[in-house]
Length: 192
Image (cartoon, rainbow, N blue to C red; front, side, top):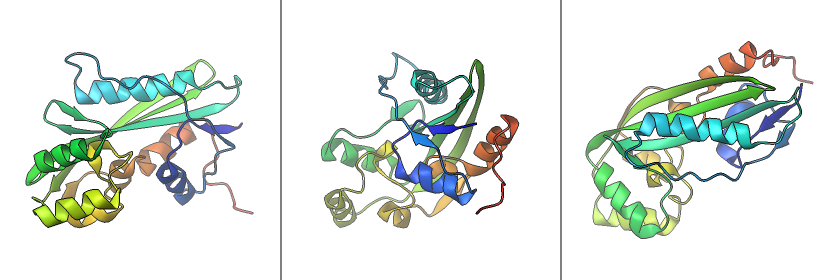
C-alpha cells in the first residue's frame, strides 16, 4: 500500500514523520478553495479536505491523505492572506480574542473515504504596532491560514490554546494515526 500525501506543506510532512510515516509520493492537488456564499468554517474546511483527496490521481490500492486548515473568527473564514495588508487585518481582528482553528482530514483508499475534523480554540494577544510590523516584515504569515503559524514566530503571540497543538499546526497527529490504522496502513512499523 502506497501512501500519497496530497499536500505541499512541509509542516504536514514533518508531523507525519513524528509518527514514523514517510509518504511514498507527494501530489498536492490544484483545487478552488474559495468559500461558498454563507458557508460556515467547519463544513467549508471538511469540503476542501475531501475535495483535495478526490482530486489526487491515485491507483485503487493507494492511500491518499489530504488535509485543510482554516482559522475561524466566529462565522468568518480566515484563509491564507493574499498580501501583507490582509494578513495585518486578520492579525488585528484576532488580537485579544479567542478563535477556532479547524483542521479537516480526508483519507481515501479506492472508493472508501474516512474524514475527521479537529477543532481547537486559540487566543492571540493584542499585537503592538512594532510586533505587527516586525511579524509582517518576517514574511512568516505567507501561506498560513489566518496569517500565522503557531510553530513559528507567531507562537510568541499565543498565550493559550485548548485542543490539538498539531491540529493547529496543520495535521492532528493523534487523529491521523487513528485514521491511517483504520485504513490498514502500518504506522508503527519498525524503522530500518
